[in-house]
Image (cartoon, rainbow, N blue to C red; front, side, top):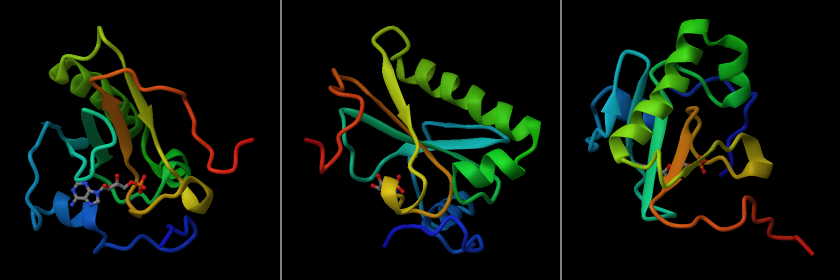
Length: 129
Ligand code: AMP
């Protein structure tokens, strides 16, 4: 079911549980602001999720409530992850889904970093003509 960005933050969502160490993941990168780990259903040869440690539902929530340090920290984490993955030269895409129209499934703000092959068109709309 799609995430309702206006619902209260659910502390038992799967990414919150990963942050608490209740569900093991391969840590691609971590620091005080962010954790990065492979997506369980990769949509490209490289597909890593980057999540803030703070409890934010989506891009709107993060943009409105996260501190300057948290916002800078997540932004810097993208660069750290891309460098660690060795894709800064070949390129990569960072996307974030918020709410129903975007198909957000997990109610903890996250960035998808996709890389490792040509990624095709920027946006695929199911009803595009
Ligand atoms: P979104 O549709 O933007 O909310 O993306 C949620 C993503 O989380 C999907 O790409 C899922 O494959 C991924 N995902 C769900 N559970 C896990 C998990 N336990 N470990 C890694 N990725 C997950």
